Image (tube, rainbow, N blue to C red; front, side, top):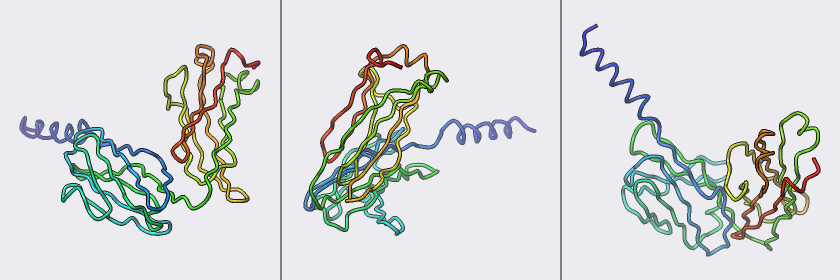
Length: 231
């Protein structure tokens, strides 16, 4: 094989492997808004994408529908875009009932095209009831097995759309976090469970564990200190 062919092959492999797909991260995971209000969804890119970003809206049981492409203009009806390269946002104003659903950002700066994880927009139609938050320490069985897990339980809230994040000694953590889907119970109230699993060495090293819950624009938390646990 000639040196030209070898160099071409190496260059092709580097373009494929070294470049990597562009990762899009959407926040928040969900948002609750009253009719006539507004909502802003952020889309952060792992590398610069200029303004090559499109947005799609998916209603329950339907395929995603294109709504706006920033490359063609930052505004379209009630949709307004902002940002550039790494951090872009979509704002929806004068929200109507038909705006409910999941919104996805999609970059078309480079191939392969990639999507964000989605943001669920929920229309508030009734009284807002904040979640009751309970934070449980690891069980003695888990400690004996060297696999401590904390459980954060959210109950009796409405509407849906509660999000959970964890902090350890004041620092946000994502590794070991598993958050389940929201479940609707009798009376239209919702329940959600989130867990934080870690090694016994980390459990013994750290002290303050916090489960932070955001619901309908308000954030509350439940805290637990390892030094006050009897496990």
